[in-house]
Length: 113
Image 1 (cartoon, rainbow, N blue to C red):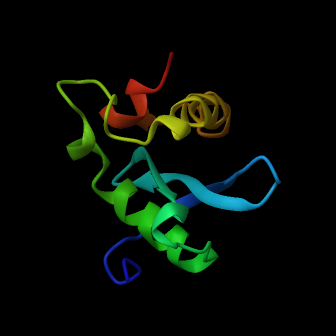
Image 2 (spheres, one colour):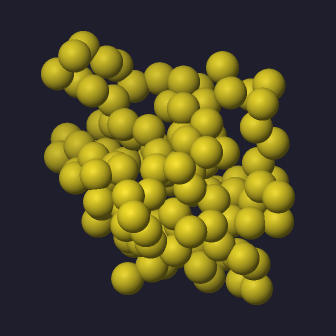
């Protein structure tokens, strides 16, 4: 879906899991226009979603491409599901080490706590 529009350099992917260790979502980071961006995708299992690796990555890449529009007055609250807030904060701490000396998008900086 997003593959035709998004060109993420140096991607880093992390899967989120439920308590039974089943994959339920993905966090992705990469570089677009010389800026580190992050995206996410999470299965809505109550609506019958089943984890599909390719589809989850495509959705996360699309959100990474447009991530600054997900800010709410400079804050990320409400822009990601509550269940992903802590994993996203931990993911940003991890990618700060991976993408040293690279500018981070405003959305990515919002998770730098």
